[in-house]
Amino acid sequence: MIKLVLYSQTPNLAPGLTIVRLSLHVLAATIWVGGQFVILGLLPTIRGFGDTAPRKVAQAFGRLSWPAFWILVATGVWNYLAINHSHATSSWNVVFGIKMVCVLAAGVGTYLHTKAASPQRRGMFAGIAALASIAALVLGVAIAG
Image 1 (cartoon, rainbow, N blue to C red):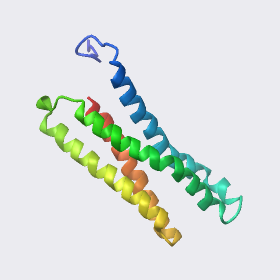
Image 2 (cartoon, rainbow, N blue to C red):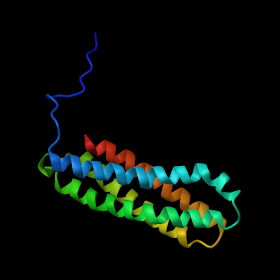
Image 3 (cartoon, rainbow, N blue to C red):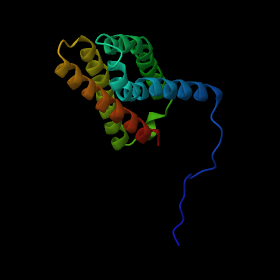
């Protein structure tokens, strides 16, 4: 019989500041990553409201998503500072480094998406930003242990 072990030690509630830090990080990720996919799913409907509607919705989303991105960065730094690095494996450090590259690619891709003049370039940069955002999210789960 195979025994599935989810925790190697007795689980405890997180300390108050840890709850705040992680809750802010997860909330910001739901806005940044989740919002991209909500907008993508609504885009056919948004286009039906007129030629300027997609840009107006994107600008409105930007007013929410960019602060969320910077909250992700700030709480990500806080997360990094809150852990004991003396036990970090080389694999953890590599994955963390790749995650940071993905975070940078997500931010740059999104910025370039907002500045692109052609629909093709907007789509390309949106795709880069979305893929990098998903990768950063998944890698963040991986390094959470």
